[in-house]
Image 1: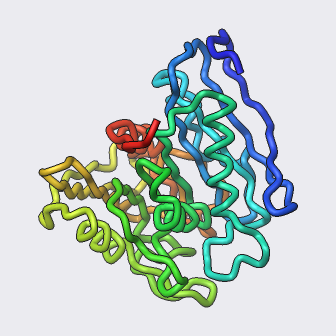
Image 2 (image 1 turned 60 degrees about the vertical axis):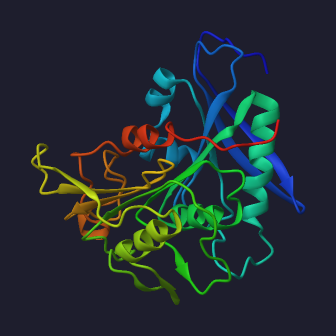
Length: 281
């Protein structure tokens, strides 16, 4: 595709993976040149959609300013982030999707990032385990990591987590989730800190309730001083199963509060853009 268009483009696409048609939406910001652009893959929650994810976690204004591609792929009802794939290999799908976007839209293979919420957040964690040679950094919202599903963290990678303390669906403290066991936010961050060899004492900052919505933020930033790798945890006090700065997609009594004291899209991109993979040309 020729870069340099004056208007943004949102393009529907699809791939065939093991005989299954897999669809996705690609957003190309305006005014881009022939430079290789970073790629942010944004994974929706269970039973949601790419259009819904663009509405919930709207990276487009950030992409317009910072010049990166956003792709929201579609699951087959849910992302198959556990051991039983039921014939749907979502790891292969995202792997081939990355290849497709690099070839079709001149994306930079050294700057591929993945984020997701809920079921999409757990899928992001699986990709961090199994596609770690293709992904430069991950950001996970309202999710952690499955325990005992046949994969685990194995390669250092920058990782960011955002989770509400009052999440009624994926508990901040982990435990059982639809018959599976998941780590707490603190436990999964500890795993990343150890793997990335970060200092165990974090830099802590707080974001007060300027929005007056009953939420506040504690940010804990763990840094490896030797190579700059970071693990960042955002604890949303009184936050629900929601995307910080996003829209209240269901009533508060079902999913809890959406904090407006933090813009997750801005924070996540600010985290991502500091990292790139060392890839063979």
